[in-house]
Image (cartoon, rainbow, N blue to C red; front, side, top):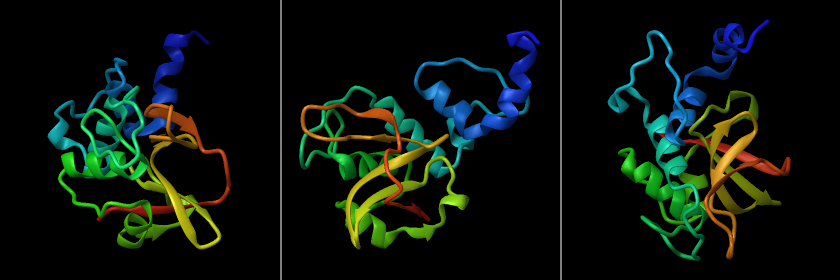
Length: 157
């Protein structure tokens, strides 16, 4: 099977949000029936696209963009630009979101990292076990595999 023949089956498995993420980070893809107008995308998908567009932006504690971010600053900024208001900190964002199971997570949902009952980090789920996030001092906004099972998921409504 050639790579060209695999594209439709790969797209069926990857889903719309993954295609939009690919487009947000500079990829190019044509999918029949998929609206290319950003207004057709869901709020969560828009937030995901916005977070992805900040790839490489430096981490700065307390920063909420548009050029520097901390973890909750990136999620706050991304959702604000997509039309939804979030509280400032990761813990406040967790308390404000609709809690969902890992099985029901979708691209654009928030991923909360916790130690016991304390939330200490947040990112935006990109699909395939990866998140867009602003990791720590000295690092930049990037797409990264979720590295622990100590996560909770929340959906912004």
